[in-house]
Length: 439
Image 1 (tube, rainbow, N blue to C red):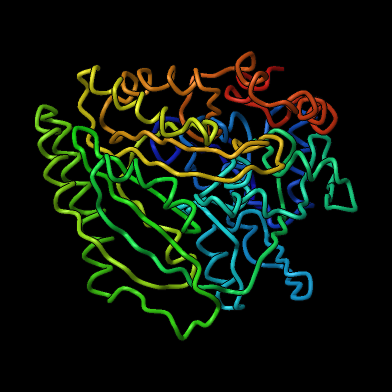
Image 2 (image 1 turned 45 degrees about the horizontal axis):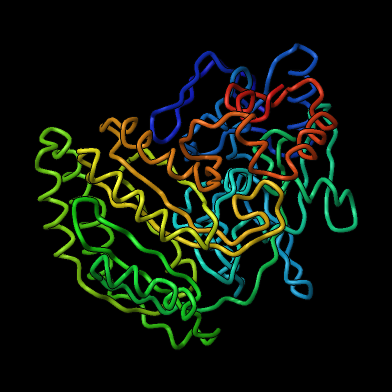
């Protein structure tokens, strides 16, 4: 492990930063444990901040920053049990590629794959789909270093109470060093993308989510248009793949969705009065496309345009009504927003701090360009989401504190008790965790 060096840290969106840090890149659990023990003895805190894709301060370090690059890669594959164990600093995009080489895949995932495995499960990355739950629900084992420097393993048979709660652990229980996922044979998804009117999309939403494995929709503010994405499993015969031609993928996903969209939204920040007309024009340019590819090529999308985001999960049965309320409130507000609103669903799971714990969920995600002021927009939407029992994504912007959180998670008391046990001196705390978990 290298000598600690003062350094600075900043998250992807630019909203969180820290300076004067001691930076280490541990290579294994023993080096993590040594760093944690030293910090604890000195009354200092430790955070293992990965790629910084959380918009909140959940991963912001105060004193010691553990970087992930020394702990990457798959370390074990059990083809009989269909599990794979990887070091926690591995990025999702690397795990996906390595799994594909092994003929394996995760069941479901989010649409961004830059995060480390530890960051993705600790913040509750969920993806979309009425049948397959989020990333943390696929975790069947883990290893972490506790606040006392103990290396602790958890599975269904060893420390099962820790596994239960640490699958979405917020970085508050320990530093994850390995994670074991349930996997399955590599499979294909048929992707169908189609623009629809607002009325048609709303009327068909329940039918679409019943008919397809994964459904994602994007509403363009100031317009009556939605882009719908439906992904359907079509088996494991990889010879049946019909991916997008390279030129079409470059045109749609690289040039238009990143380069052109980034330039357009940056320019619109200077002339916000032009945003409504620009959104209506852009939504009319969208065309349908259909292709079949291996799962992670369909699930994930490269995002080079930096933005800010707030996302809440409301109960599935009230979701469409909440979306209508949000649109009505937005149109009354007089705000101008250039980014679409993303709509997803997820089934109930048993992960205590998952946003889908104990209930089917309907996700609403609101975005702005990084140079646009997001505060008024998010402040207008958040009360509506909260009024319907919405749970905020742990890694995305929200204003909730412990008094609010405790009403949303029936097992938060259990989680806080485990935190007291594993990190009694709050070696892993920071301002965000103080706010949402108390001290």
